[in-house]
Length: 339
Image (cartoon, rainbow, N blue to C red; front, side, top):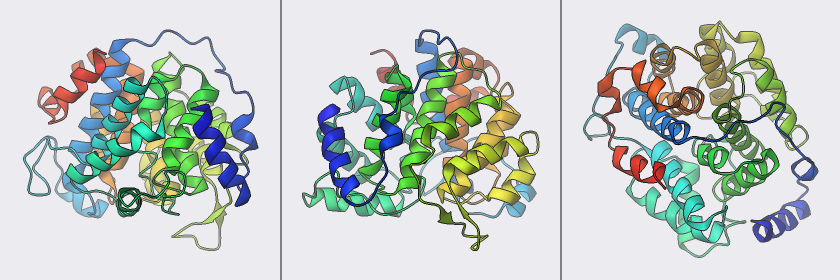
C-alpha cells in the first residue's frame, strides 16, 4: 500500500489536494477489542440486507414509500427478492482483494471492480465511467470520475474490518475511493464509513462522540461543495458529520435537512442519524432507512453495515426477520467470513 500511496499522493498534490491530514497519526480514542468473525459476518450481512431491502424503493419519494411500506425483501430490477446491487457486489470485491493481497493493492483491486461492475445491477454512473476508463487501460490513480457521489463510500466497510490501525484504515479507504471517485468529499466519505466500521467492530461506543472523532479524521481534506438543495451554502463531509449530532433521535428531520440522494453530503449524514438513533433496534433502523426515499439501497446498506459491526451477526440475526437473511450474496459472505 505504501507504493500506491506514494504514486497517488504525488499526482494529487500536483493538482492542489491537501493530503497532510492523511499523514498525521490517528489513534482509536478507546481501548480496541479484537475483531471477531461475528463482527465481520455481521458487517457484510448488514450491508447486503440493507441493500436488498432498500433496492426496490430506490428513486422513489419518501411520501410514496410511507404510503406503501414494505417489510420484507422484494424483487427489483427484474431480479428476484434478495438480489443485491453494486453496494454489496463492490463491497465484496474489495473485501476479497484485501484478503487475497493482505493489504490494499490497486493493481489487484481494479480487475475485481471491473468484473463486479460488469455483473451487478443498478450500478452508479460515476463508477461505470471510471470502470470504462480502467478497461481501456487508464492508470488507477487517474481513472476516477470527479464526482461526489456515494459509490466510493458504500463499498468501504471491508477496509475498517481488515486494517487494524486508524491511520492505515484512513489511507486504504482513500486509495480505494479515488480509483472510481477522484473527488475530495467522496474520498472523505469513504474514510468516514471505513473508520466507523472499524470503530464499532472493535467495541467503540455507538454514541455521538464518534461523530466528532470521525469528522476530525478528515478535517482539511476537502474543498467545500455547494449543497444541491441549499446552493448558497457550501459544506463538507466533515462539517455535516458533526452536524448530524444535532439530529440524533429525529431521523425524519434529518432526512428533510440533509436529504437522502446519492450525493455524499446527503446520504452519509442521514445514514449516521438513523444508526445512532436506533443502534440496538436493527429492524426499525433498516426499515426507516429503506423508506427514506431517493437512494434507499445505499442509505440502508450503510446503516446495515454499522449495525452488523456493532451487534455482530448473532444479535443482528436475532433482532431482524429471518427472511431478510435470504440474500443472494450469502454464499460469498460466508466464504469471506471464514478466511
